[in-house]
Length: 419
Image (cartoon, rainbow, N blue to C red; front, side, top):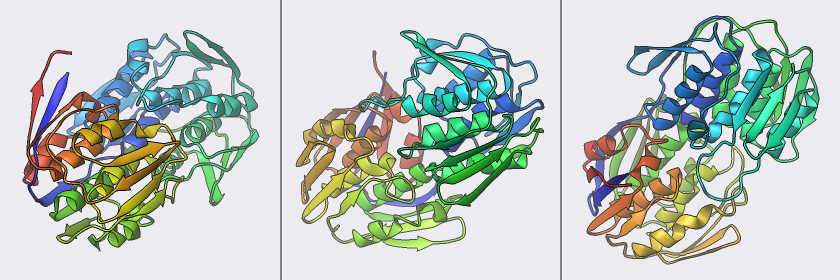
C-alpha cells in the first residue's frame, strides 16, 4: 500500500498536461469487443483502471499491443466468452460495460460482481432493465451477473439519468437488429466521446435532442484509430488545487467547453479563469468566497468533483452548503478532512462547511479515488506535513499525479508501506 506525503503551504505555479479521459477510455476500450477488425486507441491515461480494463479484454481473447507512449492496438478477432477474473472486476466498476459489449457480438458473458469506488450503494438495476428490454436474458447470483442472447432494437426511457446504463444500452444497440431509442439518457462529455468513436467506426447513432439517443443497428464496425477526449474531472481537480493553494496554473491539452457550465461557479468563488482553444488557466491570490451547489447530471456540477469542492470550501470566508443527491453517501471522507482541521457537518447527502478553517498537517486515509483527491487538496493548502494512505486509489484515475504536483512546486513524495 502506497502513502503520499505532502508538505503544505506552497503556492502552485506552472503548466499541467491533461490526460485522456478515464470515463471515456473505459467504455471505448470495452467497445472493442464489438469490432471484427483491429482498432487503435490513443491518448489513454496511464492509470490502473485502464490497466485493469486491458487485462479483462486479454482474458476474453482480445490481442493487446502497445503502439506508443499512450496508444494501444486492440485486435478482437479471436475474442470469445470466458470467465472474467473476479479480482479484476472487483476493483473496476467500469467492467459492467462488458455486459452490453459482449452481448452485442459474443452473445453471452458471465461477469463477477463489479467493484470500484466504495462510497455507498450503487445499484445496477437500470443496466439490467435496459438490457432486458432489448431482449437479453439476464441472470443474477451471488457470484455475479450473466447475459445471454442477441440484442434487438427497443424503446427505453431512463427513469433517472445513469451514465453507466446509457453506455451499456448504446453498446448493446450498435450491432442489434432494428432501431433503439433511448430517452432520458446521460449526455456527459465522455458519453458523447464514445458516440463519436462508434460513429467513426460505422455505427449509426444520432442525438436529435438533449437526452435522446437513436441507434440503428449495423452488421459490423470497421477498424479505426481514435484519440480519447481530455479528462474533464482531472482538469477540474487541478483547477481546484490551484484555487486552494494559490498561485497560477495553466492546463494544456484540455477541453474548456467540457467545463464551461461550471467555470462561473469557480469564478464566483474568487478565481480568475482564462479560456483558450485547448487550454485553461486559473489564478487566485485573495480570499475565497463560500458557495452553494448541488450535484446534477451534465451540464450540472459533477459528483466526481464534489469531494474536491467540499475540501476547498473549508478555506472560504463563510458557510458553504454542498448537496449530492446523485450519491448521498459520498461524504464518508469528511471524517478524514476533520483530522486536518476542517469544520464540516454532513448528513443525508448534504454538507454544511464552516469556512475560514486553518488546515494543518494530518495523517489521513483515502476512502476512494475522488475523496483521495480532496484530501490531497486539503494537504496542499494546509500547514505542515500530511500523509495520505491508500494512495493506490488515486492512481486509479490520475496519471502522473505526484510527478505533476511536484512540477507545480508542491513538496510531495510517495513511499511504499505494508498493506
